[in-house]
Image (cartoon, rainbow, N blue to C red; front, side):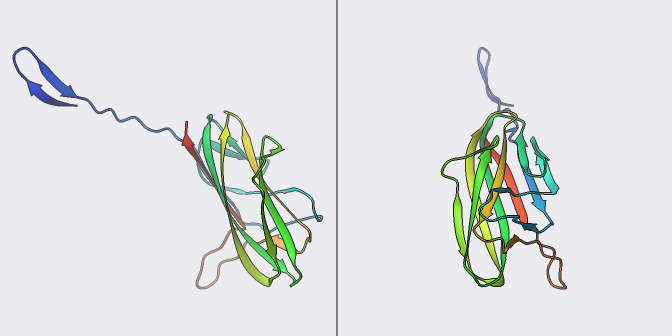
Length: 170
C-alpha cells in the first residue's frame, strides 16, 4: 500500500493486492517407444514421467486428470517414425472422460523409411473438476512408431511423447 494524499480531514491510500493466479499445469513425457497392435484401432498415447505438475496428474499412463474446473490448453509433441516407404495414414485425437471430442482429429500421411516426423498437436477444452483427457492414435498400417531416441555424443535423449497441460482460465 502507498499513501497518496494526506491532509487534516481526508486521505487517499492506494492498495495493490498480489493475488496468485492459481492456474494448474502439468508436463509429462514418455521415454518408451509406442507401437500399434492392430490397424485402424484406437490406442491411447501414454506417458511414464511427470516432469512438473500442479493440479494436473497422470493416471493409468494416459489419463491427464485436472483438480479444478476451467479452460485448458493441451499441447503435445510426438516423434513419429516409419519402418518402410509404403504410405501410411496416421490419426491423432483427444478424448474427454473416455469419449472422443468432436473436431479434434488430425491426420498425417507418412511414407518415409526410417526417418522422423515431428507432430505438434494443440487443443483447448473446458473441463470440470476431476475430468480427464487422453490423447489417442490409430493408423491404417502398424509399421509406424512413436519413437524415443537415446542420447548421442552431441544431443540429449528425445522422448517419444511430450504433453503439456495448462489451465488458461478458471
